[in-house]
Length: 299
Image 1 (cartoon, one colour):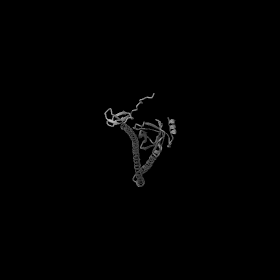
Image 2 (cartoon, rainbow, N blue to C red):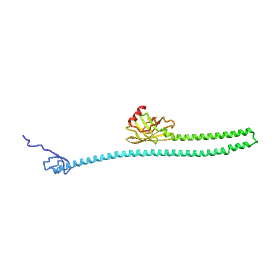
Image 3 (cartoon, rainbow, N blue to C red):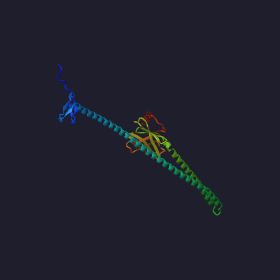
Image 4 (cartoon, rainbow, N blue to C red):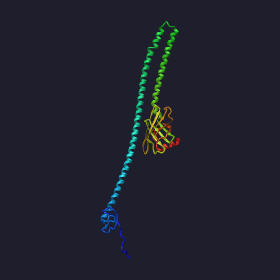
């Protein structure tokens, strides 16, 4: 038997007077608010509720979108700041390298000027010895009949022996200077090559002062590294990517006559002091598989 009183479906509404949340029968035209005892039209109360609900939903969506945009902006800002820090640090290292090169060039020019002055003095000394001391002295001693013959010939022999020794020592000093210049010009060539790091890395120093750095966990070699050599100090600069870009600078004392091994040290937290051993004079770039093979072969 059909139910004479079908179940009433109530819907949420909001009082048009006090704003209280109510449940109403949408089939009715009006009702009285149980909170403020004010009569209200049910359709308007339902509209009030729906409007506020839609407004809150829209407002929440807008806030979420704004938050997402802010997060993306902050992430990109952080990435840009990291890159700028890296670029500034790299430029600083580049300027330091340029300054080192400038100082080295000045030192070479100073040495060259000193050598030129030394050669000039040597020429005058040689001319003096030839035209002022040995020959005239020999003539004077031969003509001097007052001195005993043995004494005259002894003085002449001493003068010419001194002259020969002077010329010999001067030529030897020139040879030493030339050797020093040749050593300076070949230092870069001697140090260039590929080195194996005992912590599991490969470092390649190129003649143009760039470098390749590969670590066993890398997918490929870092080709943004650079190096310099001044005096007996080798400096290697490697950009390290960890949350943000950090330029790690490590140094080692290297004798250019013995570049078989050296230890790179740095106070940077991203770098562990590492012993490097030269494994070849190769300065080519390699694949990950080739670098891994080098590491496994030298472990």
